[in-house]
Image 1 (cartoon, one colour):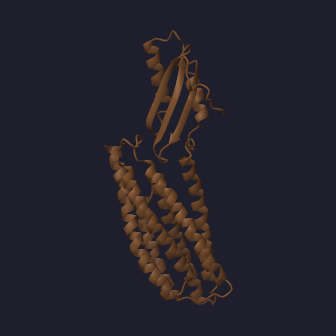
Image 2 (cartoon, helix red, strand yellow; image 1 turned 90 degrees about the vertical axis):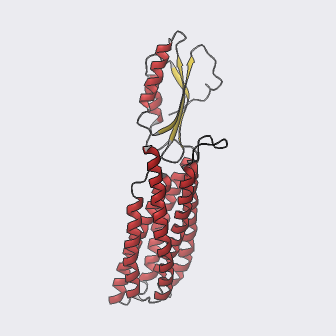
Image 3 (tube, one colour; image 1 turned 60 degrees about the vertical axis):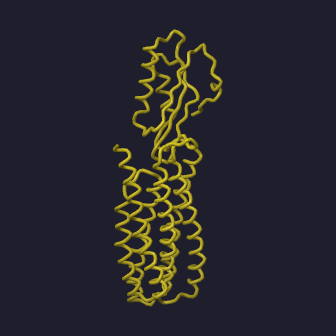
Length: 297
């Protein structure tokens, strides 16, 4: 029961963050146009990307909570990963667009309405801060990507506030496009890192926090285990993992010894959040069609 409750929390958190973000994006786009600030417009476009991302993440996270079906025997966990992938691409495209708008303004900067800019920035810090608190500490890749976006937004608004403050006292209109470019490059950097992590999961890489070489050594060191092969560990969504291995036992192994081997393997992988665990026991004189696939450290 606790497991499901945790997931509904994730879905609920993303839902709240979506509505907070969406309504604020509308205010912000109007505010950016009225104050003539490219930094605010770039933030608004970024927030619009976030709103789309959050909406998609909310839908896909909800979808990913469904149980396994005839077509998806592992369940729908990967749909939340698909959300993280689409979101990353949306943000990269948005960031490139903002850079094409902001860079030409370096040569011809326009002075924005600084008081309006600072007012919007304070509102931005409050709204996005509330969304960060809602999404913080999520386990799924989807929620992690979302909380990063929200945190970037808070930092962006802090930057916008100080730029507005500086331009109130000094005639430095170039600060506006400079802030926009700085914010966008920072966002781009983090999105690319998240995209790489998401792609690793899509390509069924071993989760970064786990040393599969050590697991294989630990299994092979067990009494009654001659060798292992076809050992695989992969992740469904960055949060739920699956593990399978073939363990070879002596041809004289008893039922008790085989049960003991299984329990020992389970305890070796006990600290990994496994949704799926498959242990195949083979006698050493038994043929295995899969024994050719070996892991090389």
